Image 1: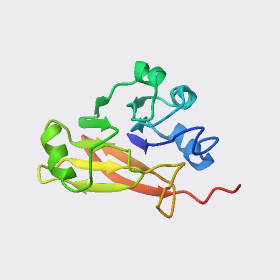
Image 2: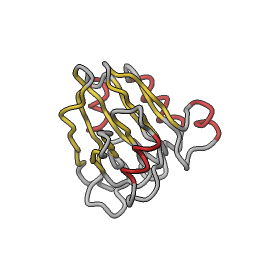
Image 3: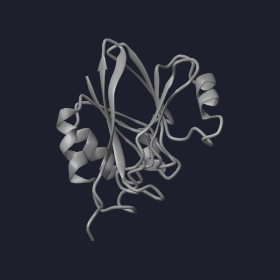
Image 4: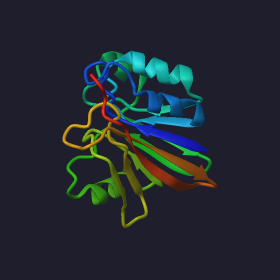
Amino acid sequence: MRLLLMSDTHLPQRAKALPAQLLAELPLADVVVHAGDWVDTATLDLLESRSRRVVGVYGNNDGPALRARLPEVARADLDGLRLGVVHETGPAQGREHRCAARFPDLDVLVFGHSHIPWDTTTETGLRLLNPGSPTDRRRRPHCTYMTATVTNGRLSEVILHRLPPRTA
């Protein structure tokens, strides 16, 4: 099972559209995961229309229309992998401990908010992934997203994809 992970798309505020490289990944993915801050419902509609399955949550910049369609925390069983998605996890310092305590029943937690890619594993074995943002790099050198593979309940082949700079 192939996963496509993204967060913090902030459309149309930070970009006019999702990058072509990311859109090309949609038909390859069995599950698209979005960790919040969509900003517009059109992005959710687009992903739902072009994806086999979308697992997403709302973020702090998402208004009532998105909050009516998405949960604050999402959970999914993906071929035996217990996946969770949330937008905010708090400051980087202490993140592993907080998330392991809050989500003891998960194997993987995908989160967003910071726009900073993150890939760590807690002492309890919980894998924490932040794919960054495909549209707003902030202080990072690249906009990013992730892909991963799930086989027999195990996550593998987690790849951070760096997008080329947008041309004006």
